Image (cartoon, rainbow, N blue to C red; front, side):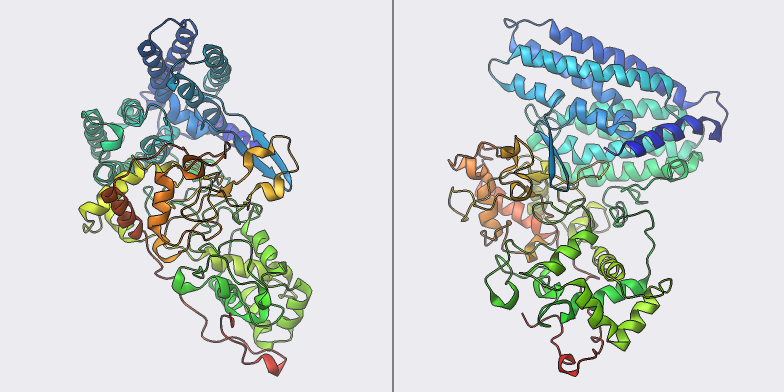
Length: 631
């Protein structure tokens, strides 16, 4: 958690009371603050009630009390998530330890909160002592929340911004099963959040009648759909997203603009991963430059074009035979089609499969083992790697300075530099080029945004399975379908799925992922054996073979692996596996539908442009070096 940002937000929220554009009479914030304080008291009462339950009480009573706790928390969740995400994570985070890395130091935090209680209650004989420990933990966080909301009341602009964020959270965490993996209460949770939001929005009717009525009507439709008698796994997520939630999120943005209340960017000067998009699947919903190092994220088209030239130029390698494009080919969505890429000079292979670079800007950790915290640093690793490019920066700078064309390109791209060809400018050019490789207009995107209507029934079923029965969306979060964690998108998750040596075997691969780098820095590091970053599923139809070791040749093998519960489900001794080991019970028809949906995530438009030519070099023997590398 970035405490500076949290403190900054709190100070600014406090100060912006004086900035409101409307008089204080009849402000929506008055109702919202009263309601949140009341629901906080309800939450504490429900928690205390569960503490009083005894072993002999029927399991139904435990579940009912737990639902009352969840309902009370869900009624205030919108503002807790928006303001205090670290408290939300403590109260309702995932039921597995969280991992933070710092250079070669590993920090492991045990899980707490509602999802831990839920896992305990799923058991036939829940450990009440552990349940009570979690209740005490949550109560201590409730005390912090009470103090925070008392001293820094919710502002009108926050209701609108927090509501917009809440819809993203519903689509990514509540309606994916992530929030309630044991009892699958996502439909009930979403209904509670939306009902509370609807109440809080009533005060904005006088500011923008037409826009308010559109949002209010849409929420009414949502509440009706969520109240229909259907199970979580049978819910029609596709239609609900397309016809209800995505339009609602856009309409809420319109209401916000019509009221004249401040936007987040006007109140808080800090960087934010969320861009200007009206809804979760808008191409500009996330900012591809958010994770750039430093505060200055300005760049130019000349810098992008220079980065493109460097990317395809074998001048980047010690032997003038390899380029970045050797392992990241545009025709294969910037992968290379190999289980593991060829090593320099054909000396075996590199350690892992080459991931796609399209949309790679949307993550906070790089490499399969997440060892690099930013893209700039990742570029240097590849340049220096003996198996990849094996070139020292000093030699690369010498080569580029010997080319009049490169000198001209660097001077034009970085005019503020007296000596434009430096380690910093080389990495910056490559970084902004890679960040430009965004493609978020697949058939799925156009359909879910209602721009076209050509999704087949099989593809719709596939998306519904992805969100529900298949539990895919609990790790592959929208809109990038990777481990970029919603709703704030400030961290990237890894998982231990027990990826096996072969597609059909049970023996886990010997590559231990994150453990290889961090295993010696923490006593409990055994937990991260086999942990790898959750990759994007966008363009997955083009990026076979799959997994970090490239052992899975096609999507059929991948789906079978997950359907069987990973290595643990296949009988391997892999206790740290975070993937549920139970079989998903997918039929052949359902597997085919999942693959059909995944195939709709293909979009490489605008990412395949190559340079017209490579700049001449000083040494004529390299004048005809192979474009994109020889291998």
